[in-house]
Figure (cartoon, rainbow, N blue to C red):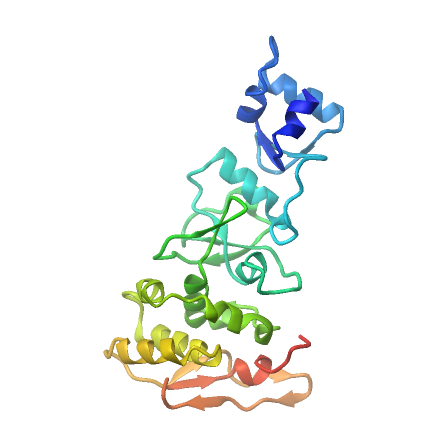
Length: 255
């Protein structure tokens, strides 16, 4: 029984997995109880799923998402994925750790087992990436979210990984993610790609943005302080953006 469990190379197992072990006369629930008593299974908040002790260890980048992995194994229709700043960590752009964050559409109730995660309310318009079996925002979705919700994003350490993320951007996917979004989101996303050293994409977005509104567009929060020193905003006439984000974080690699 234990050998079959470990040979599965799973970090999370469900009742269906345990039933597939095929122990004659044993139900999946009985198998789970026996393995728990023997110390091979560790309970998770997600009902019907357990962490395998001594099983295949997840990569450090995804180890904080066991509950999400379990929920998706038990309820594959759950519209949750790795989102927010965790995308940078899971994709390997961010060297340090960050609070585990998931993306979930607005008005979708957060499952109880996922309540400990940080939450980004967002609906991607392009397919998700797959990293070690977990659904993860593509870099295009992340950049558009950053442009749309700059005050809901943790910008510390942005200079460490923004160029890596922008280097991977695909023009078609970025345009698809921006489709039907307001001009302000287009222009702020264009501004981010400019800072991320993708002026080619920045030009495409700035020229293709809807023309139904005019800037200036506020990027970040006014009058934020860094330590005891006030940082004045930057003005980008090309993007019609008043930037309070990058003057604070853009060159601060120690944050």
